[in-house]
Length: 236
Image (cartoon, rainbow, N blue to C red):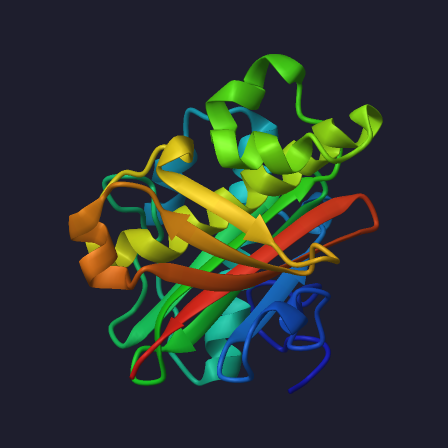
């Protein structure tokens, strides 16, 4: 894959040789960009209408996410018209494509793949700062709090942010299949020893488990001030 996209929408988007590529199998194309270098004018009029009342920062990040998506689609060999939003603001991809977009302060990215190879993709990136303590109980299950209790107190807020990021990734991956809302406490995360891989278990939602399987695996890492998480559901 090329290191820099030739996509006419934004020649500053990096495709393929991205920091998030290691989260995914080779069938998934990734693209990333610093949103501060992307101009809102790259949006299609139909996309622009989706954020017409948003604050400038939100509009710029939305434009950067769409630029990443179109660059990744171009690398995949797919035409990229307007990428609109569904009922829960999920991206509506061209026929035959699945993908995920993430945007946060200072970073935007997308991951796309052909539906004949990959069933669904989830991607989320967050700043790696500490999650405020008052939000922990809304994010973490009892089992996750048990795991957190083994860490130094000063590390817990950052680890809760990692759990938050992974659960966002899981939600994005499962939604195109189930079209179901999942609360943070509907998902339970177990990490490997280095927090570079995870297993997600859907709690209680039996009908969702039947569609997705009993456990979902993904990868994650922290670097350069960001938490990254990604997962795919493959076709059997």
